[in-house]
Image 1 (cartoon, rainbow, N blue to C red):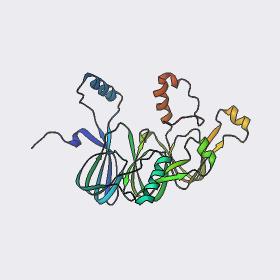
Image 2 (spheres, one colour):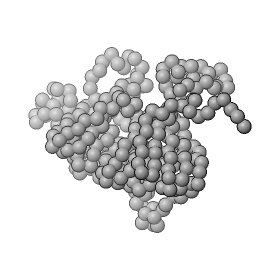
Image 3 (spheres, one colour):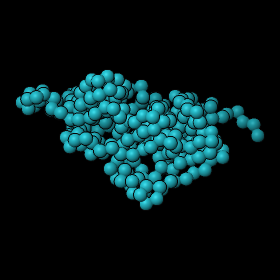
Image 4 (spheres, helix red, strand yellow):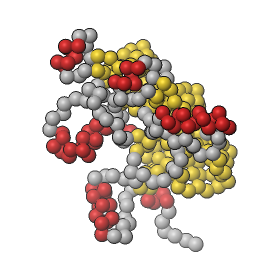
Length: 280
């Protein structure tokens, strides 16, 4: 059977990252031209004008494995088998604990073999990173997929102030190992600021950090040694990162949140976050 169109005609590759046995690609549909109803046609028109595009992951594996968030699979082809590794009662208990203290799902299906895996289309955004026997701490719920040998768990904040005042909770998601990881991030990767510190300190107003490497400590501190100075500056408490490594900041995330809640009227007074942003 001959056809004039194929997948590559309708999609383009936004980014790609490969390891020895796996290749991850972020695909983006150039334009949605369907719509069986008047309402869906109007919505796709405004999405086109606003440059809101549909995305998905394509993962090629060669005699290896990947793990996905539950429900992320759309379809696959090739000699690939799916398993959900429980790890016995102890392993299941650990998975349930990690799920209860973070926004990660209890079970992450593992796909093993040779072939191609495609994830559900989404209007969200993806970032690909490669770990080399490293550890990163990320916002809860943004893990999406990885090579099978990557471990996803939780890590407890080192002090109570970080949990109570940093709006990050008592536990955060920890990802460690070697291989490619796909994160579902709240803003386009082009809007993320990636800051490297070398035995330095980074102070941030608000919880806009999406990721930090494992050798960076996180605390919450007053913006000034004096309570009066902190109160009059309007900053209050700051999220503080110390050490050596990389931190990802998403400064535009709060802008989208304010637009969604208040429309353009919410942009007339920029103000400051001062750790007052409430997570969804």
